[in-house]
Length: 356
Image (cartoon, rainbow, N blue to C red; front, side, top):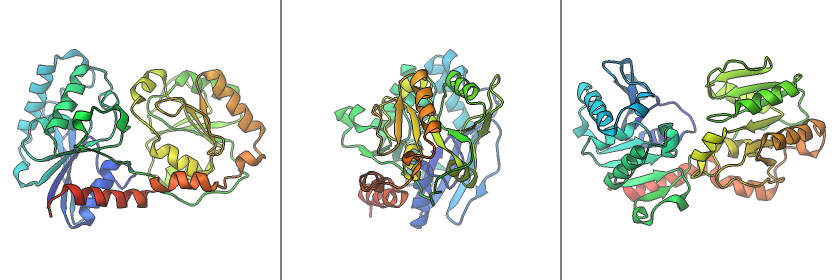
């Protein structure tokens, strides 16, 4: 079968659900075109592997910016994206048995085509568009209605029962790697997350000047302390090595971002951190509301609570808190979320939704 997977990022071998789906379909002998929707500059197609090809759509007049979505009325946005689709004439959509559309701007493409669609709902719509405009929720609902199925990474309790026959809830899981035993000598904290509380990050970095704070997954900010290193997006090996060197992992979401996370439960980042036996500080969000000492998952609600937890970690660095052996119940919690088990679940899902 032929599949077109549409995302706003290039295909890479990561733990992102859309990448795992792409790789899974290819491994079963299907031909998969992975389309980035969209770039300002047209890039040449790439043959990733025998069955995976990387394609790109571009904005031919390079006009669109994220701020425009807040300024333009909905009908003008639809006209503009229809123009982008019309100008990218290289693809024959009729050859694809299914389109797999990921959350975010690819929704525009899904709404403009007549193919059979599987919707991969990877994030809440407020995060995908960085906006709470009702327009985007309406667009997503239209795509859900149009889709054959929805493979969602979000919490099922937030979805209307009218869609219950379309929704399949699936997480990509985490890829385990060998854990590094304590004690650790590096004075390093790793900071993960989307939109972060920079006031808190600067505050703790100023208070703990002898420690380094490596921020992964975002680009630089100005007016930050000298012991903060903003790493950007890392390859898997660099990411792994940083986590293994960390005393603890901090996930300090900003208050505005937390409002967008009400539909989100545990993420692959948190599962992996628990697996490594590293203390994790997370600002309370979604259904993650209480500290779990067995999993070394420490929840804080304000900046003062976060600093008290960091004090405890530093003062008890030689204690049993840093024995990264996992209890049987923690392993029972993690096992369903291992990438190998999630892949088995994905195979069952596609057997149930694709024709023989």
